[in-house]
Image (cartoon, rainbow over all chains, first blue to last red; front, side, top):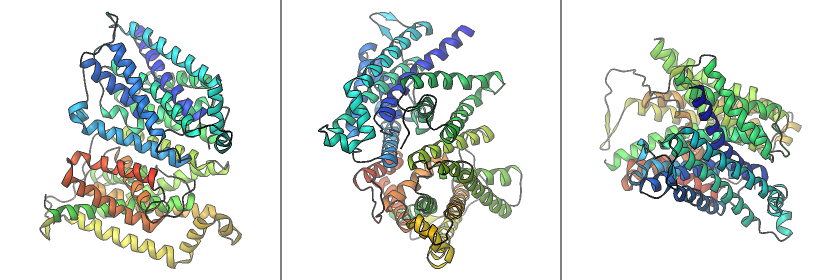
Length: 290
Length: 290
């Protein structure tokens, strides 16, 4: 009992870690306030679900979840290229709404508001990951790989160019860098990992519906990124663990199960507001939001 | 559905959106940030009415007035407790937007914790008789919506253009520093804009609660409409927001001619995205920071 509860928490930490470090690349390292992240997560979840249900092996569906989300991310970078700050935030938020309403309305593909149930557990080379423990191992491998790859990216010359785009876009342009291309790569990479995370989420929960991908679901991820601190992957990892575990204490002070969801959102929102007022750099942040 | 019915529905929807959008736009033009938690003011107004009238059984007229006052106070408190603290540190408009998003989630989850997640209706009259108008039907509450909206919007116009304090408000929105030199306290004008803007939102909340029903996410839905209307008209431009509101109401209901009704919201999101990307100044707007 306690063991399966711990496994569940660890799986959720893994899924959110992938989402949060991916968003950190866009917001913290490239300065793109992307509020469309949840849409990439949704695309990954739906692609993976629809592919596996039509008989495509899990691993292939998993990779396609990332790739199709990546294509959307890459494409989104072009129309929003000239927008900055609030307006970029709003246009990407509008992108979330557009994807969400497509999930509701394209009933032939997504089954609309009812969602898709009985998503099969992943099967890798004939090995069925039925038990949560096996699933946890898969999540840990993907989360560690994601963290490692993003760590390599932000340390690479490419990562430095992204930071230059964040700090001095015009100067970077004058120095001969194609900043639009850099931003579209950042969007694409960020969306790719969000898509992978969406696939893991769908096959773990085994049920998806549009209500799991509203703009409100962005709040925990955004809170993790900002509380962890912009431009810090370690801070993001730390904040993921804290923010997933902290609301669990609500269970032990007797908050009833049906209230856990909204109570958790309440705690995240409150923490985010307090951090913005009292410690805008977050736990380990290196840069300010602007 | 008859064309005349669609036109009536479009105008009624536009009247509601105009109340939301004009308040939102007033707050934006004075404070220069996107107060997305404006949606929470609307939702609280509807829920206050439900609590006072349907749950406690207090006199209807009195409940309406108290609900509007309480919801206005919520809007005012958001400014004092959160935005003012952030402004003190000279934070960017992007941080204010994120804080506002967190406030929206905070207050919506509070509604779920207090009242539950299900949809609620407020029954005032036993049976509603509709009046026939040019071959379409209009309900008494819809007539009330039209009259209230027109009276308030004319009042707002008069206040902003003819009164000394309204002119002071516009002075702060045009140039804060010059207004301060002339002895106008910008903090007082920020407060005032929140009181007037939230008051308009509170009236909209009561009207929607009576015409349709209330549910915790209603604020998010409505602020997206109000916000889209402002973007269409030119954000921060109050007359533009009102024009945008009626255009949006019209576009939405007319879309029912061509598309399944489920796409009504999708139309809003696509219009919002297209305007932000291709015409961020809107139809009438001129102010738009890069």
